[in-house]
Structure formats: C-alpha cells, structure tokens
Length: 408
Image (cartoon, rainbow, N blue to C red):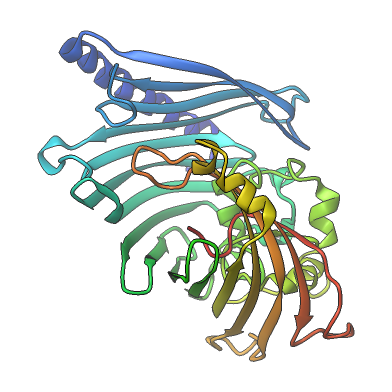
C-alpha cells in the first residue's frame, strides 16, 4: 500500500467515479459548470508553484447544491522530486437527510502535495436552527490513507514520522449562545489502524463574554490526550499546534512560505493545541535539538484568556462601509496557563503560565454557512513567564503569530 505506483491509482479511480457522477449530473440538470482561476504560491522546495483552481457546480447553486467539486493542480517551477501536485474534494449531498441549512453529504478527497499523501472518504451532517447560521451542530467523520513521503517540505523534521497511516477521525462541533455570549464546543478523536496503532482525543471550549461592542473577554479551554506509539505530528507542544494541523492551511503547509529563518528563530507561532504562546522560543529550540529531541506531550491541558479593549485602528475599520464586515483589528491583553496531565512518566509536571499584550488583524470572508474563511495575523508581547529558564521572568519578547488562539 505504501508503494507510490499503487498509490497513484487512488486519484485515478476516484476521478472515474466523479466523472460518472458528473455525467449523471449533466443528464439530470442539462448543465454543469467548471469555474477556473489561476493560482500562484511559494515554498522552499517547489519554488514558485504555478497552477489552476477548479470549482465545479450546478449553475445557480452557489456552493450549496449537488455535485460540488473543489480541486487544484500545480507545477513546482524548481522541479523537485514530485513537481506536479494536486488536491481534489468532491461533495455529494444526501437529499433524504438534508434540508435548508441542515445538509448531510458524503465526500471524496485525494491529494498529493507538499510531500504528503492523503486519500479517503467522509460523511458530514449539519443541523441549523432555521435561518440562523450562527446556531448549529455538526458531525464529521472521515477515513483516509495518509503518509509523509518527503521530509524536505517540513519546517522541523523531528515533528514528523514517515509511517503509513489509515486514520478514522470523528469531529463534533456545537455553536450557540448563552447568557454570557456566544460559545463554541469542538470535540475530535482520531484512530490509526496500521502497524503501531494509536489514538488521540481533544476537546476545545470557547466562550465569548462581551461587555459592549469594544470591551469584553474571550475564554478558551483545551485538553489533548494521545496514546502510546502516537506519531510525533499528532503530539502536543506547549505553544503551537500539532504538526499535522499545519497541513490545514497553505501558509503553514510547507517550509518557506513563512521564511524558514523566522520559524527557526522561535519568534513565530502557529495557533492551536495548548497555545501557551510565550513558550514558543523554548519549544522551537527543542524542535532543533538533535540530542534531546522535541519537547512533546501525550497529554496536556490549558486555559487561554483574552481581554479586548478598543483601539483607534479598530474603530476606524469599524466605520468603513462593507469592509467592516470582513476586516477587523483587535487589541487585547492575554494570559495562558497549561500543564501536562502526567499520562507518561517522562512528561514534565510543571504548570506553565504567561501573560502579555497583543494585536490581531483579521480578514474573514464567511462561507455559505457563515463560518470563518480567512486568516488572522498576530503580533504579541508575552512580557511575563512563570518558568523563564535562564531568562528574566519579566522581559520584552516579540512574537508573530498565524491564526487566532481564541477564535470567533
């Protein structure tokens, strides 16, 4: 199964199934449209990656109809070992289980890009309260074959294993409001079957508690647990998202899109996991240490708190017609506290805390369900650490970040 000559048959078979279904779609609707757009990207292995994006749909359905196709094909102009890469996602609603805002669907996914294979099938179901897209429940399950076949693309090689994986993941999300404000609950579990099997389980709870339009609190609680034999890309650091989650976004998927010297410096943070952001520099040093290896946890828990306060740039953005719906600039104070749960003897039992101030620029163009589809850039100053090592506890530290620690 790990043989690349066999793996290349997966997208071919998948494409045949989709072609047959699209033929049926054409017969049933008499029309089907493929929208294309050029795409340019960069990383240190492919160089400038030139390609085209494809979006297939029944005309007039606006990403909410049958036979949805989302794909891309690219050529790396530095001609690495695998110069051609692609991504393909095909989604088919299940009409008997679907209604407005509460769709059920199956999906087929296949990709070979940035040195990583991923091929599989999934099921999604959403329940929405009437026309209010802010209140919903979702379940998502997917079974995939995955393998890291080229380490040249990764920013930190010790954070990755190269074993083949057959994974089933189950994800549940709930969003609603209570007397304090909006809250979001995410539960996710993974089970890997091949050879050295392993499993992970994580929970994230976010609560917003606004005081008014400019002032308010954001709270986040996170717990992650992994079994023995879990591959390193699924384990938890104190400060940044597990390496497997870096694959979810093109900015962090391959080294060089964010300059590698920035990543190596420890002054850049990818949101996710425990997000004890003040310890980014210490964790990155461990990622580069060939003797001790990366400091990773099988189990960790954390609480992140942010306090929003007004600033003139944010107030200015809020007054721009239309743009204020998509663009925001936040200023906030933050505090993070986390600790290992002690599932294994080698996990440190220390409790780590940090505090500081930060700014975040958000560009968000919601999808047809109203969910975030954009990015967050952060600049933060974690000026206090409870466990500073040889440094002073109070010190000016500069940190750039990608993604929001406390989302929405």
